[in-house]
Image 1 (cartoon, rainbow, N blue to C red):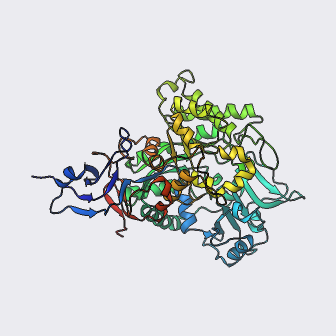
Image 2: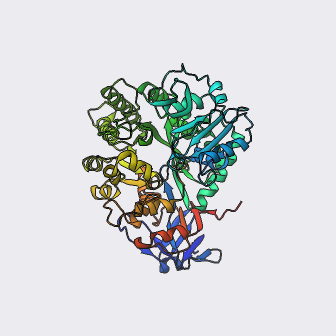
Image 3: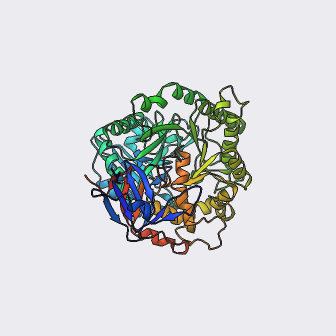
Length: 567
């Protein structure tokens, strides 16, 4: 009896992303039992039976499902569907921000929570101390590294002029020492810990709505970079251990159709230390999904997120040369009284993660921080580093964001198998203010993707949503063009990559980061049928902007149609 396919797509341009033949394309693909069953017209034609669904691609591209390897799923879901929105199209200036917040309803927990203001568009943050005296108010910025609070929120959090400064964070103060309401990096925890947790009744529908939206973009996999006990120190604080438990509930019920890898968070955006990481590793959280019998291909706890430094805009990135209006180097946001002590503590943290057999994703935005993180990974994975290190050379630790003073660090990363995940759309959206902060020379070398290709680094590009849009088409265009809001990309920019390289970075290379390149990220017989069908062929590099007008006609996750929605 003939074993026919469940689904066949014909008249297509199928980008297989075959690592052995990077440019291999074919014209048809067949899917059966959740896997790719055949490629090419001749093989696929034999798999068409009376019950097979046949889709005519009309020349459109079929690509592997997009894998956004750095997307804050919980925070982005809340930003899109759970909070008062302060996006630039809604609140284009500070007066509009105040107007939106003045009209905003008080939430069921008595707080007003908002998200999305962006100082790269609005200008320097304006205080909201006197806004909405009737309720505590918190407004998170688009980067996840700043928030604004009103007087009532400060009162609830018991913050005053006598509140001491926070290691790895900034309480912005007025001339009299009183807090202005602006909190950066680790200091955000002072407010976030005073807020009641986001109730499941709010979070659950937001997650499901956002999942549907991501599928409509062709996204089938993502890395959620930071859920756990230190969630109050990251983004909006919604990524709690309870949120991870809710994701587990959705996986067990079959409602989770995204494939999610999770990095645990045991210390927030300031003050990471080895004892906190050690305590987190002992807590059993790393085994929680496996202990519940959750399919690791659906929801998997992969490792630990570590904040080595902050961001250039806040002056908390650690650079080898001075930067910004304060003309300082910044520093690691790891606990320690000196650069040497902080580097030593980072090394201890990485050693703990590696010895636990887990993957480390290290946030480093300054070149000095990146170099220190790379060296810490090398020491942690060296056979002589600790008795447990010898068996853990292949945890695929990686640098998140990353800045480089020269090619040397990239070459070291390639030789040591250290990955790199970065965000071209952040460079585009915030490029004008970053150019002012870093200077033209350093900014021109920011996110050296071509150099990473030539050095042989395994890298991916990702959105960092809700910091930027999760629309991967915009990320691809940003990587190919390297423009900013005010300036087009230079045709001779030496760090441009091709559209095909960008596609590989969001499919095959992202799967490598997940330890899953043999099951997803490419469209080969036997691979999981995570794919999306575009309405047009993949555009040539000189016309890459056409991708922005391309529709996603169909998305499959494990052969299951998840877009268009069947709900």
